[in-house]
Length: 333
Image (cartoon, rainbow, N blue to C red; front, side):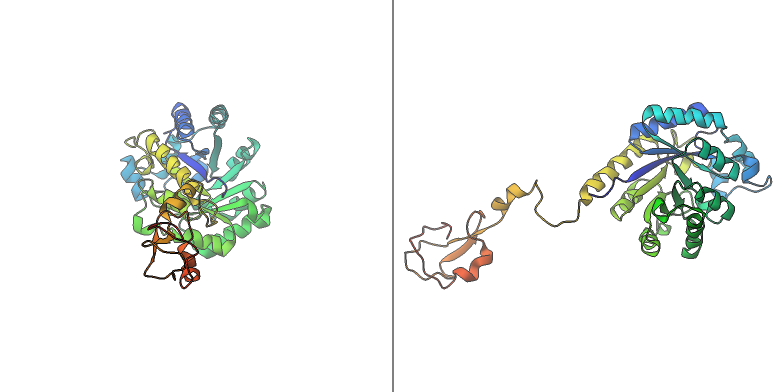
């Protein structure tokens, strides 16, 4: 059976700048059965120019007309908050992850012992940043939203040349719109990434609902990332396109069921169906009473359940021979 799918519950900035709310999100992700809960690590002044405007979806979801800087400033959490969340994750048995958005925070998370560096789609073309993460030689999960194959190749090359082996990199197919329209998902592009680069692949989902990440698992995703929130009606840029805790739990359950259902690919009778073989299959039997020495053929043979006798696949071996003894109707030959 394939390795277990790694499910990342993306808390992102859905804590609204509250460490207490973030801790409750850690608990919700752990309760849902996710493997990791991921936050975002940034300083607004290092991430965005002060007058940069919000995306349309951000204005719609926040109900505010302000700069990206003003919005992000409210959503920052400091180093101590990160350490507090890491301790909460250790207590709850779930992996702490956070995406850094600048070189200073790459270093901070590295010093904190972050096991996996998740790179967001927006940083795929940030060469100094890619080199800094690649030099850490940690496991890397790279989202590829908004990118074409050439841009993905350049980012992958930067990470590898900086010191991270390609075997430690997972590429996530993604679409950077919140929520993503179904017609823009293009799940087959995930398989294209696998064929083009020989990397493990996964899917970062921004659609509404849970069916698309579950479908991605059936198509070979080894990592699934999905935004979640404690309450979708809260104000904030990502709440509206996020799962609530019970939906996150349902997604994880569905993924685990699909994992089981995928199996090992060997076509053979399963343990559960093996007892039904004699019940459902058939045998060659006497269609009517047959006397010893009578020639066997289509006029006196039939195929009926149960499959405890001679297989009908041996029909040609039987037809034309003579009965070695008497048979009653329905008796296996």
